[in-house]
Length: 137
Image 1 (tube, rainbow, N blue to C red):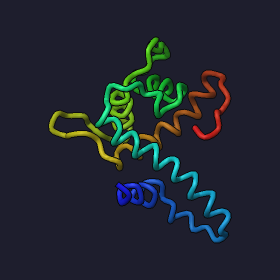
Image 2: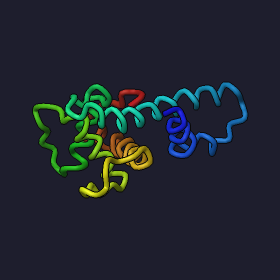
Image 3: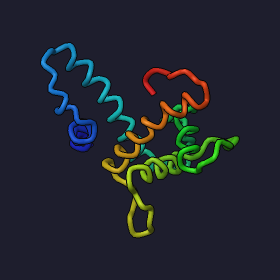
Image 4: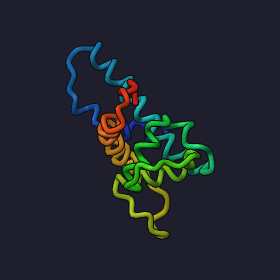
């Protein structure tokens, strides 16, 4: 697992590409990218272990709502949050996962691509709904 985490931080988040020269800047970047890496790892593996849990154990309400709008093309939101497995599959779809029976569960690379897309769409969604950016979304 730790090797997968480092893979996500290095390749998925691209921390090496930052080429930061000051230690303080590097520390801050490592913390931020580690948080994102943790979320990606948690989505990938927790959704396999406990797929029926509410997605709000990982995603904030506004995140799953933005994801729902993006995937379903509607602004009518469900009354009940989707499951962890469902949001993980939606994020994977944004990352290029086709979801065929023979594909198996999405991996960290697909999840990080989709999560990056979700993060980009989230800013637009916040503007569309008149909400404030909630910080580390």
